[in-house]
Amino acid sequence: MKVLVIGTGAREHALVRGLAADPSVEAVVAAPGNPGMDAVALCVPLADPTDGAAVADLATSLHVDLVVVGPEAPLVAGVADAVRDAGIACFGPSREAARLEGSKAFAKEVMAAADVPTGLAHVCTTLDQVEDAMDGLGAPFVIKDDGLAAGKGVVVTDDAEAALAHARECLAKEDGRVVVEEYLDGPEVSLFCICDGRTVVPLAPAQDFKRVFDGDEGPNTGGMGAYSPLDWAPEDLTEVVVGRIAQPVVDEMAARGTPFVGVLYVGLALTSRGPRVIEFNARFGDPETQVVLARLESPLAGLLHAAATGTLADVADLRWSRDHALTVVVAAEGYPANPRKGDPIVGADTIEPDSGAWVLHAGTALDDDGLLVSAGGRVLSVVARGSSLKEARQRAYAAVDAIELEGSHHRTDIALAAQRGEVHLR
Image (cartoon, rainbow, N blue to C red; front, side, top):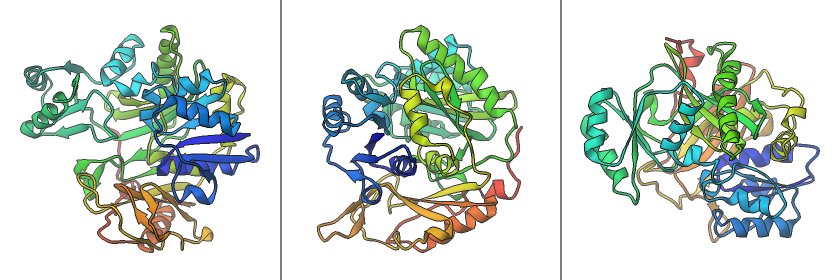
């Protein structure tokens, strides 16, 4: 099988790495990829990943058997539709199905129709409506940009002025809408569900860390780290989420004539009333993908191809490593507000394979002299596996310490509470 992966980040690097390790895959191509992917795949130029015709033309010219679309923007733009129209199997939802991520309001509508447990919400188009909704729901205030915002469109705060400022910024956009939601208590969990429009196959749960600083302080980011498995989570969590949430949503989407094919990312809060959906995404999450795929022992290409071709029901039960996996994101100075670019990265290529850790590139590039430099906010995702969470943490942070990037920062407490047994259900 020949596979084309669309995207540039650490999520796509993890996908490329997993696909390249699959014996059924003869070649992996990444477009446009990054310097890290270039070590395990052929990277080819792609000026605009949201241009469906360009992606379809590229896939056709390369004679690939499967296209895997990593980021959300190309999916919402309809890239998967263009690839399928060209007669090529594509792992990723159609433009209409991707609205589950592209519009928070649409996702709430689908959840209501499918009787999926989630928080109360109000869709607002004016600041007066936002204020009324905030008064009705109370603090902490949860204000979400209705559209795509690269993982940074949500503000959760007790500060009413900060909540209103975020709402005002979102409403100022063309066709701006915000969703004001009930705050959901309890630890958060991410569960990826592979879907072929009918069948749902869950992956292993993970937990990520959105706030930029230790102790869950500072603004939301695209994600500063993650780990899997979740030893503290209920044993039947995956079964409950599939039966109560993922399968009903997939059934509802099929009934609407817009079957969901790809990854349904279910973001959950494990509240005192049971699991409640915080959000849906229509693609693999970053950085959770890095740790989930680090533990997956079943062939990745076969799984994704089965989803793309409607044959998931024939896939054997997935096999998982008992190891723990953890990832720590190394971010550029100024991230998330104003990340600095162009700083040299030293040491990323010195992590030995037998150390149990490896480096996935996110925001990197080669300068005119061929030196590796930062090119984004989240620069690297350092992943490690270990027989225990403690060992995985030690290996990951040892690798982080070996990397030099001026002004960079990272969280030092990824999965620390879980290691100490301090994560509890309400």
